[in-house]
Each structure stands twice: as structure tokens, then as C-alpha cells.
Image 1: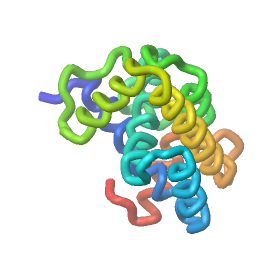
Image 2: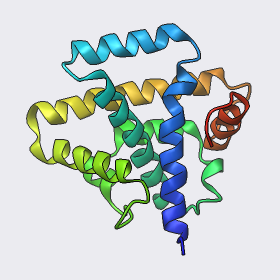
Image 3: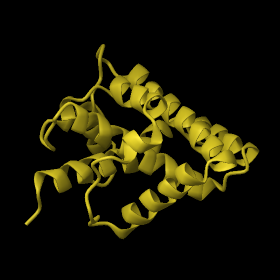
Image 4: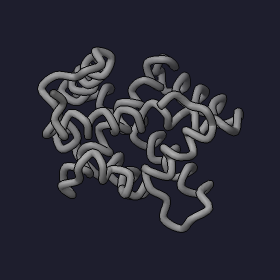
Amino acid sequence: MTSDHDMLWRHCSHLGRILLPMVDQESWRRARRHENLQAWGIDTAAGERMIEIFTALAAHAVALDASLSAAKLEALPLKVVADAATGKRDYELLAGLPDTFADDRDGLAVNVFRLYAYKGGQYNHRLTRLSTELRHALLVLAERAPILLPTCGDVFRRAAEAGLPQ
């Protein structure tokens, strides 16, 4: 049986997976992100996966702070998630995670995030750069929205309309 906490993580993880495809609707954004990652010495595929998991961690941390259920995640404003990406400490992002992950890729990516956070130095610097890239991506989506304060739910709906996997 799946707990609400597990469902919350799954929704947050889904947000992470659809974020970059939604941002990449303007193809030049993907090229610019790849240039940034390469300039920072971060493998493109690994960097994009870290941005995905960083998104999930930021959304999850904010949802837990606000005592949101999985069903209420849709009401979470993108700006709040963007602020958490750059404003929360690594340990705040890692607090309250499920003990196990339904998707092994999530568990592996969370462990890589932990390793980066605990190693410090250049790895911590990479997390800072990735958090800035994540914040930028979230703000791009927020600016595209036809409403004043877009939410995670708005991104889920636009992703469904764009034909992205649900």
C-alpha cells in the first residue's frame, strides 16, 4: 500500500522529470543549459538528472514544510519551489525523504545529491550552480504562464497538454 508521503514524493519526482522538457519548448534554452553545464565541468546527462532530482527535493521540502498532501501539491506556487532551490540548505532538502523509492533512479540520484552535499568543496559548488540553473528554469516556466502566480498543477496540466508522459 502506498502512503501519502510516498505519493507526495512521486508527484515531486514527476515535476522534476517534466521540468526540463517544458523549459526546452524553446530549443535554444537546452543548448544554453548544455553550454553552462559543460563550462562548469558537469556532464550534461548527469547535470540534467541532478536538476531533475533537485527539483523534486525542493518541491518535496516545501510541501513538507507546508504540510501539503500529494493531492495539494498542485497548489504549490512555482516561485516557492524556485526560492527553496536556492534558499534551503542541503540538509533541509534531504530531510523527510521516503525510506525507499519506487523508482531506483530516484534513490540513486538522491544518493549522488547526498554525496555532493557531504563532500563539500567543488561538489558543493556544483550544487550551487545547479540550484541556480533550476531556479532559472522554474522562473522561465512561471513567466510563460498566463496567470499571475502559476503553480505546480499548472505545470502538470501544460505538460499533459504537450503530450509529456504522466
